[in-house]
Length: 474
Image (cartoon, rainbow, N blue to C red; front, side):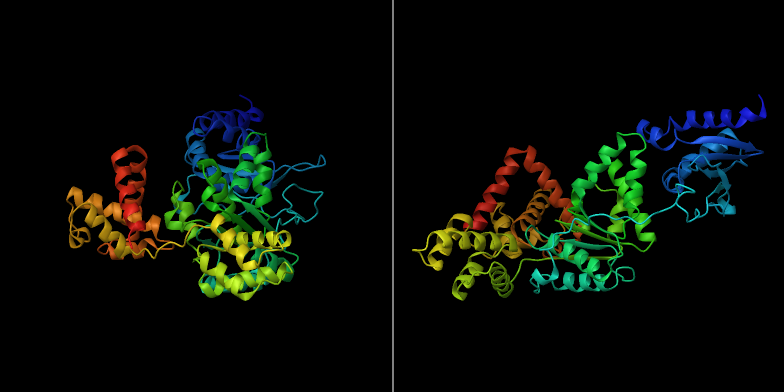
């Protein structure tokens, strides 16, 4: 075999091995575009489309490359890159510090240095994005009602807005039930950052949209590279409903985006309907990163905050709503801001048409149609007593560490009902009342019961009976 052909033969052997180790789509995207350039001694030089392509290749497939080259070339194998040039200019061999340390060296993966600043020279140049941040102007801090329910989140958000590149809250993980203002707070931070730092690239996107974009990208040749390259140029990335980021391929892509942005001091903000510890079907390495910065929970607003929210929204709508009407609505609706806002908007609309009725009359009629009766004050103690009575076991046994099957099952049901019936009751609080169980034990118990309810008719009846007794009891 001629020397001129040896590098092609070696790389084709490498490709044959790699194709058996990675999925077909990943192989087409990340290995087919690579072209062998030369081989000298044990050093194979390959050409890649861009410096970003090289970075992703090393972050995702370094171990596979290392083992494959060692197998084909030998223990002294090394790898170097050239970055493909545009405008028919010749490729330039680029050498830099090896990625692997001498102690671990099976091959030396030689990274490319920063490309020249002239955009005509190479594709490795990163140009600043000009994009629509997709932020709703109405979701600003001025329209956000502060209270004890969101105090921590607002303070952290304002600190981030003042210094998006230098703060300890990265990532900021905002979680809580529906209608508590997670999206509003996340976008308010983004809007404030754009106002004080207009040069920064801010983007708001839902996890579902990210997943859809990823799925579209993997089905088009070379589009995945562009997709990842785009997200890695964002300065402030806001991802809403992160719990919807399902699928190993999508999570792997997001993992690499997260790493790149975080390592480069870019701000990450996530919202979720549950705490990081309660997220299911997520890779552990991704979950651990969600916990790196600050996690804040938004809770149900208290009476004072509910009234203030209604007053603020009425003023924004330019409608004078009597104070006693606002107080009545705030008393009837305790769950979240979204329901409060819905009733108020309905009230304003009806008052413009039904002029013969007072606002208080309309508020009473609308709330009866749109809102359930206020829930009774359900406590952990009340749930425990209901479960112990239903299964005829003592409260002391239910809270003990006994592993008897009946007690274990009763205990798990009690934990499940506490979590489902008591708003904003943390796993740790439930575990504390159930004999000092940790949050992981409580979560595991809740998941077991949730699964059994779906497949076991008798188990479903247990839950229904106990729940009815708790809600109906006085």
